[in-house]
Amino acid sequence: MAGGTGNGEKITPLRPKRPCPECGKPSAREFYPFCSKRCKDIDLNRWLSGAYVIPGRPVEDEEEEPGSSQ
Image (cartoon, rainbow, N blue to C red; front, side):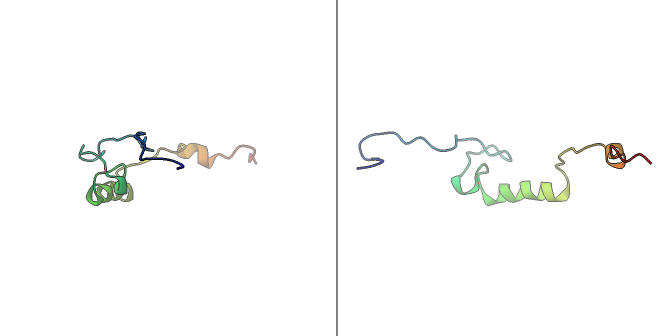
């Protein structure tokens, strides 16, 4: 029998158990890494409202393109 789970072998989960980043409760598989749809939606709202920001290049760098001196 291939992949035999009935012979006492312990199955290793693909992802380690982690607490929910919003409330600290254990994460649920269907909402990973969150514990519920509510916590997942709270995090999504923070991204969409601009509360979370990934820094980019400074504005000065975008205005001065290298090799475009006139």
